Amino acid sequence: MLEIRSVVRHYGKFCAVNNASFICPDKKITGLLGVNGAGKTTLMNIITGCMPAGSGDILMDGLALREHPADCRRKIGYLPERPPLYDEMTVQDYLAFVCRLREVERADIPGHVRNILELCGLSDMSGRLLGHLSKGYRQRAGIAQALCGDPPILVLDEPTVGLDPRQVSEMRELIRRLGENHTILFSSHILSEVQALCSRIVIIHHGRILKEAELGEESRLLRLSVKGKTEEVMRALRDVPDCSKVRLLAEAESGFVECEMELKQDAGQDAEVKLFRLLAARDLPLRRLSPAGDSLETLFLRVTDEEGGSR
Amino acid sequence: MIAIMRREIQGYFYTATGYVAMGIFLIIASILFDLQILASRSGDLLTFLGQLSYLWMLFSPIVTMRLTSEDRQKQTDRLLLSSPVSLTGIVAGKYLAALFVLLLTVLSTFVYILITAMYGTVYPGELMVGYLGFVLQGMAFLAIDLFMSSLAASPVTAALLALGMNFVLWFLDLLSMTVPAGIGRVLDFISLYTRNEPFLMGQLSFASMIFDLSVIVLNLVLTIYFMDRRRRKGI
Image (cartoon, rainbow over all chains, first blue to last red; front, side, top):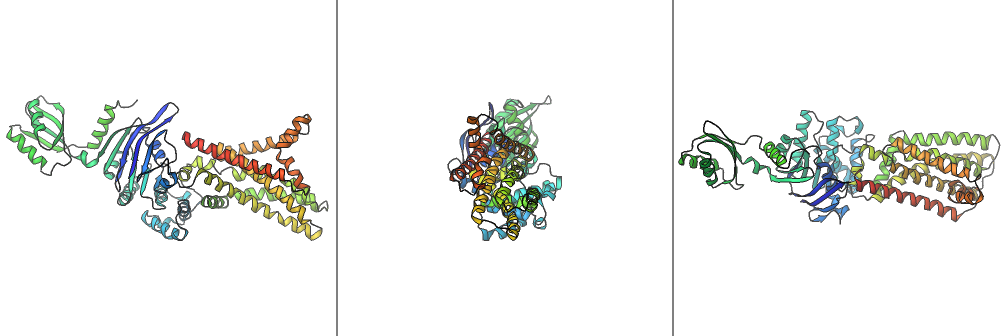
């Protein structure tokens, strides 16, 4: 497990990361979501040891990066926004070099490199110079280097930036496969990408962590349109046993109340049926009941707006 | 450290850098050999080595220019900094790679000894001492220029900085002959060229050896310090 504890980082007087704390559970893909300049890259550089934190701790399986830098770096593979490739090397030579850098046993290197090449779909490119690869393959080579030494934690900084739609889809599939065996922290400002890949999100804004949530949690958000007096509708919704939060969105002149309701995480599959029955019993006709569309976008905008939007 | 050294050595010979540095050195060395030894029918290899030592001024910036500055420019430093290797290991690996190219170049100059030995007499003892001074001086230049590379954001800037620094060192050496004796003594004390003179006379000077080694260690420590400072600042 990767744990970030009260990390603070300043550039001069500018606070790039402000008391950031969150966890990335084992074998899950955690999305670090934030607008450009939110502090994602700085935080990732700190997590991977490329830059020290002003204060706070990074823990990897209980080991503190500050006290055990070499041991922690063995546990982590990093793909920076610009893949760190030596253009004059072939893919195979480069991966063998990274394996040596990451202290893989000499005898194991050829087999290890072969497995990584296969996993990343680079087998056909193994003899090509990195400088001659397309953007998509360079990105794959970047991920491949992060896998050298088989680190259990992967930190990927915007791995799909600059790729065409087909390459984006292939890259997502690769990351999804890696997520089955690795703890992944993945940064992006593309909401749909995070929604497609991650089981958990962390929203960072102006260097502060504003929200840490399971994505499934957010999909339990329902949008309703109910006819009746606002107070009665809200009271009825709050009385639903699986309801954790209700938010009024709008009151239409036609007498319909538009609202959003968050179900508890342990709510059963029949939560919507119970809701329907309860409203019917109180004579509150239901015009629409649907999962809140773009829930992540709604959540992101709501959370960042509450914080004051752009500075 | 070994992994980094191997990669940098590969880098020298996968690109033109290694060939250019060695090529320029050996072309000029061959011209000097022809003029100094063959044309004048002299067997004085120590004087020839003294002349060759001025070539470190050109050779060293070419060899060191991309060592740390290119990592910074291409952001491959992220790979090194996130690996289990320490900053000291990174700098040592890079320095040893540059030293490998230097030793390979020095090894190539042995052909001049063979040619001289075919037509005259070579004194192995004094030649070995001469070569020791020659290599130590080259190593000091590499360390100074590696430090210059760590200050630069691109290989071209690094080469210009290193070349500038080497010319300043040479100029200070020339200046020592024209300034008052007190200042001249100070300049002689810190001059890499004056320090090499005992070796060129076949004398094994421990003072000069310690001086050269101190210059090497000081510059490597400064390189590590400035790289760490940049890492801490996040630039």
